[in-house]
Length: 255
Ligand code: KIV
Image (cartoon, rainbow, N blue to C red; front, side, top):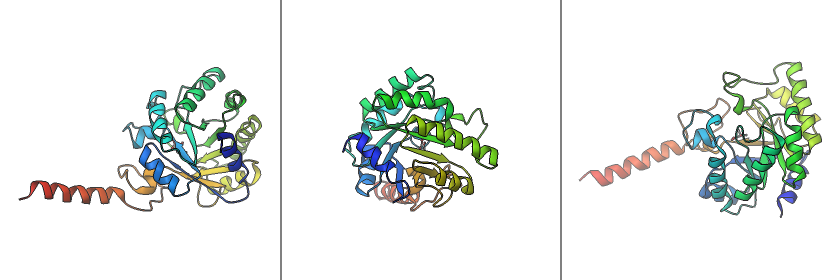
């Protein structure tokens, strides 16, 4: 399937089977997740925190994104590979298009960017070039410094209406899906019911959106130093790693 066919078939899932998305930043993880039938592999700029050791996503460069996208795409996933446009790589429509093309050349099949009405022209420029775009509304990690932390969104009717207007602008510009991050469950549910494209929730509560995305390290428990309150680990890779390495050190060092 082409990238456009994959994104169109995900868009057609609105109101049907929910979409399961996970982040991936390297070849083996991408292969494993793809073998499990994940729908979207997001090479998110969360890689800055959970792989590269930065305090937030504002340190991620285009070079970082290209390196990790190439690794993920070498797994030749059936899932749609979506790459994040890193901060300040899409400050104008022309720059957004150049960056999106670079992500595609590195292996992305679609791109994601943060923001609503103010980004609609950039989204249109990318989509006009044949590259599918996923939106991202609610809590925007690239704004963490301006907003002085990560705050829940959609807590009032005014906030929710503003997110709705942003989403409408993205939909009119042609996005195939929109990530909703850290929006209170009632608002996420209302937004999902009223928007024409699938919403992919993170930190919005269970079954409030048309799909979910999780950061892979949150799911696996492999980044124990910061676990967001909404994370739902399914295993404890950090504990398994520590135990295995302790056994190795003992085997090697003890007589
Ligand atoms: O970078 C990322 O992992 C993301 C998800 C939180 C949606 O954008």
